[in-house]
Image 1 (cartoon, helix red, strand yellow):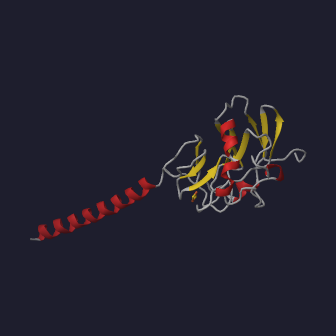
Image 2 (cartoon, protein in one colour):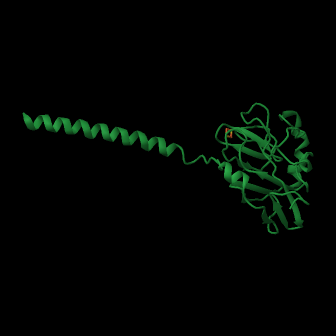
Image 3 (cartoon, helix red, strand yellow):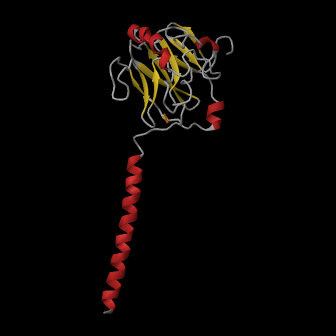
Length: 198
Ligand code: FES
């Protein structure tokens, strides 16, 4: 009888332990596919400019650099992607990039860039900081049947066009940020500072 009592108690303990571990395992497994960027306040305000060599960047490709703890995307846009931008204006929250602090003055144009084909963006969603993914092709996507290329944030389904401009009806409030930068020469970009301010 005494042994029965011990065994039952032990069984209960093991069952409870397994349930707790199982619950924790599920919670952990659900998270790692969504990468969130939360650079510290110190990382955001410190850090020297970064020189990016884009000599090998081909048409339609993206390369990522890091500046102040943030991913900086540089994309060489195709002519088709550029041609599609004006047609998106009526679907966007801020098509003319009027919201301050989302881009330097030099990027308040239809391409949001110095050279039309080269887009430079901070690759962090303006909603809650996830990292959107580039969907560069101009073709219907499950999240937008009229897709003309751009960026899709898997966390809460925000969409941005190939200039980083945010669409209406998504949780992200503003366009993706264009950082300060300038061209050192045809193949090198200095990220983190505007020309003359270095
Ligand atoms: S963090 Fe991108 S949509 Fe919420």
